[in-house]
Amino acid sequence: MLALVVLFWGLNWPIMKLGLQYVTPIWFAATRMFLGAICLFLFLALQGKVTRFSRHELPIVFIVSFFQIALPASLIHTGLSYLEAGRSAILVFTMPLWVAPMAVLFLGERLTKTNLAGLFFGLGGIAVMFNPLIFDITDRNALIGNGLMILASFSFALAIILIRRHSWTRPIIQFIPWQMLLGSGLLVVAATVIEGPPNFTWSPELIAIMAYNGPIASGFAFWAYVSVSSNLSAMSTSLGSMGIPVLGVTSSTVLLGESLSLTMILGLSLISIGVLAVTIRDLKQLRSA
Image 1 (spheres, rainbow, N blue to C red):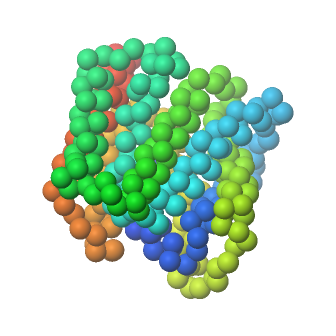
Image 2 (tube, rainbow, N blue to C red):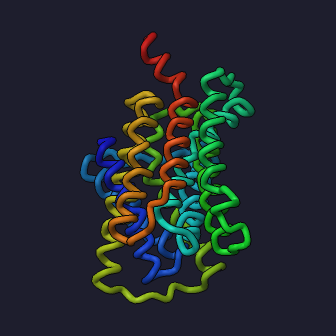
């Protein structure tokens, strides 16, 4: 299942980039999340497993929907309008690096020397990608695109902290369809305010892109990733997830003709080492269990 998540999300970076030729970013995000939510509800209904959440659970479900679905989806799709798909995949993948210091601040966890080394390597990888000798800091579009991807990564990290901090009375996977539905609703509001009413025409290409992004890259992949995270250690999940930016960069190079520079390879390598190091504690816990 983790391999399928890596495959579907890795390939989706160039597909999302192509989709922006047909529909504006936030409407794209709202549509895919709505389709994903509907597919998940249908899947669970066939199994008789659709559950409701109580009024007491609404605040946390709403907050997680905002930081895990609505905000990062709007940032990523908008950022792709300014930035290459491969570079975007790498920057969003920095999410585990931000979880570590947030866990210290909000969860009372302690950073080991290995964790600190991981942060050093990860931030070093980001620094390589923003090397002023290569990165044009006067390029407004590049600054906007890179900034939005980093913010999306922060949002994902904050959602993870919120999920860890809350005492869930039942498996969080039961809330995924509701989170996607609420997230799509928030995205519709944002799209209407920022982009205006939807103004796109359905074409065979757009239908194919949405058929992939809705049921597969949103509905199945989100559900599968949460399932994997619930059954594997964070270390194992992080190890497998490294394939997402690698495949994202590779598929963007093949499908979109994006350049694969030495800077991107070095940045991705350092960030990957950093992600391994900041999640090494979970591997030790798994061995001692």
